[in-house]
Length: 155
Image 1: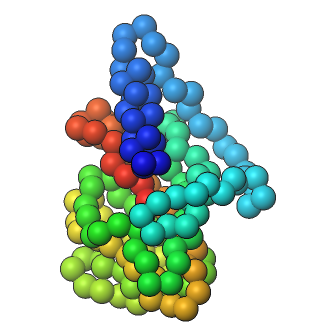
Image 2: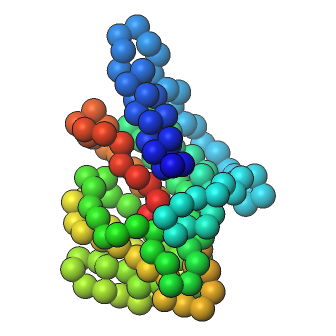
């Protein structure tokens, strides 16, 4: 339900920004955010917690998103999927099995996963402790307008 509500809010915001005479969302400037400032929100689909840091336009991107997810042992955030935007996942804690370029890789703390545009990808916590990972996604100019509807961001 939370993802549906988030998708609806994002869709309305994108639609409102496209209305002539309406101001575009402000461009995100430089910032530093401490871990304590990032509010933890309950999530769904296997993720116990999501910390949304930002999801804003920048001077060179239509949208830059950063969130931190906590995934319990044995769980996946969602079934394997693909989307036009690219993303980087940085493992902070735990061990995950990631589908990358048609292969499965087991990676742990400090590891980096790059998911290319429109390639199937997925992830599962294969460790005994929660996996905590940062997800960085971006939309190049024009990508949001070309997208039929917002995609989930629970990677």
